[in-house]
Length: 176
Image 1: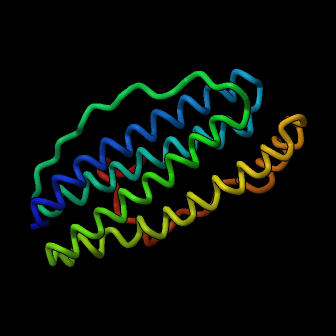
Image 2: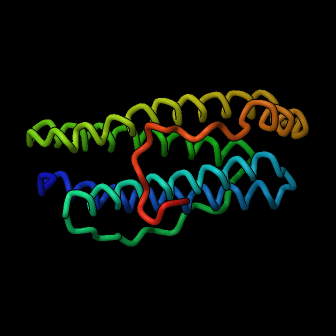
């Protein structure tokens, strides 16, 4: 069984992942409303990814016979000043999640919870990718904010769906 201190924090992180899911949905809807289908699709996919991260955490808790508590989440930001604002928010959110993931790893190490420490390793790798992706996206959108077609072309070319990561932990419910 996972350390109680770790499982308490992992339950809180499930809420953080669902909040990220909702925030990315709000970003997707914003871009959809601007008729930016590529950027909207990117954020819809990001939303599903965040949901899947939450469900991976749920599955880990179930696998370790720990209690699962799905926390409520606050409403996402849904009004943005310009087309860069959702990406700035997403980048800040990914940096915050990275710190939360590091905190979970520290707890697992402090508690000598080796299984939980190993479980968190995949999320560390994932956060490096997420922050890099949002940094790149923000650079492109900031540079091209007056040329929506250029942004859409870049997203279509560079942010296409990647292959499923075979090293990812299983998600409860089997699919996103």
